[in-house]
Image 1: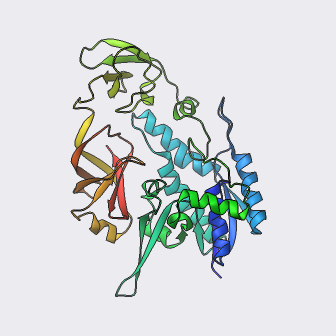
Image 2 (image 1 turned 135 degrees about the horizontal axis):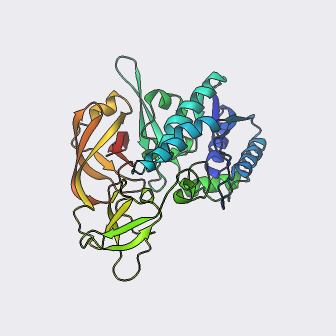
Length: 359
């Protein structure tokens, strides 16, 4: 019997994941990853409540339950990455880094060493296993059936080896179906709201979180066209290209961030939605990751599409490799507010082939 360790966060998705695997005859063990337990002033980290819910579901399902303490590694690999990125003026994605370094590396390796054959998570994604003529198996990451919940954007840095040892039971289901299944099974998490905010930290805004680790100071908000100072901000690190909210510049047309100077701690804005600094048809990416050789070859396909943020529409594009770690992406249409530090993720049909970090 295949032994599967399920990452149980205390939410409905991971609860149903564990339940489905029990129904399918796997030898299931629930694992709660204790990645962050620090309260932020004004915001309480929900780890105790989440742990209690995960334990209760494990008891309901009659499965063993373990706790893995990854706080040190999460701070080093995810939080420090987030802080360093913002300090340098970019907008990194902590969820992608958490998946790369914690869930599908640290959790996977620890579980296998602990006796598991595979791991499973509550992500909305699918794994395609293909047998080749030489007898080898190839594993590819596919978008979930529920396009509204698909999470492959956050998973694009997974390795083929990790995919070969991972189950995504929710990939064929919609969110309403997951909720319905939880209710049918009487799981205590059936009505629990989905978590928001920073992965494992809780419902704290990125600005409030960073202010606990980064010393910031007020600076000027400058209108690009006139050069006039039209307001002040609490730190240039908190602003991203295309941002509209949080500028606190009153009256008239809305302003959008079109640039910032980290050395001067200045933010530049415009009311012109057609400003050339807001729109791009080409951009560069680095820190490239292709899930496997099949994915690497697919990037040459003329039908490749790119997603530049979670939930955004796919856009047809061409990928021009500059070297092994830098590529230029040419879009079919111009797009607004590309954000340095965020990821561009590529697809060939339903297959997520990989991506890179926007420069």
